[in-house]
Length: 125
Image (tube, rainbow, N blue to C red; front, side, top):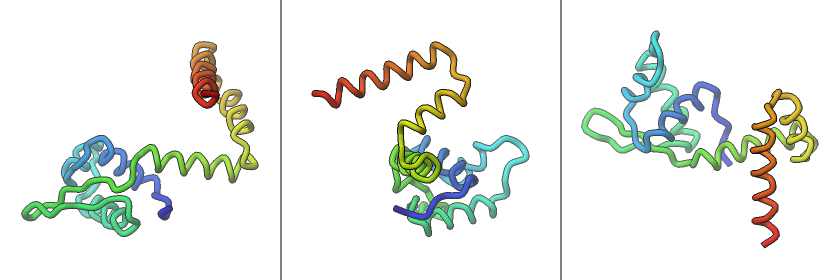
């Protein structure tokens, strides 16, 4: 797949993923004050375009940006990389670490168990 996005690029991608097609102004407006400079956002957008994550349509003097990579696909790859690099490629080790280290409530653990049970049922069919 493509080169990994930086943390700042991921922040911009979140705005693009949430809006389908957005202008640089929409991205800047999504930040709290102090807002990033237009040149900063333009640089991030250019890098993301060069990496193949986004494209744009020219609309007069502006560009309307849209994602070329789905959010689920991006984060699925990232999680798989974490599991591979830090958990010996074991999803079980990752799940165990996640459940134990995040101080999850009983309710959250029960929801997680329900998700796992549903996935087991789906795969058995």
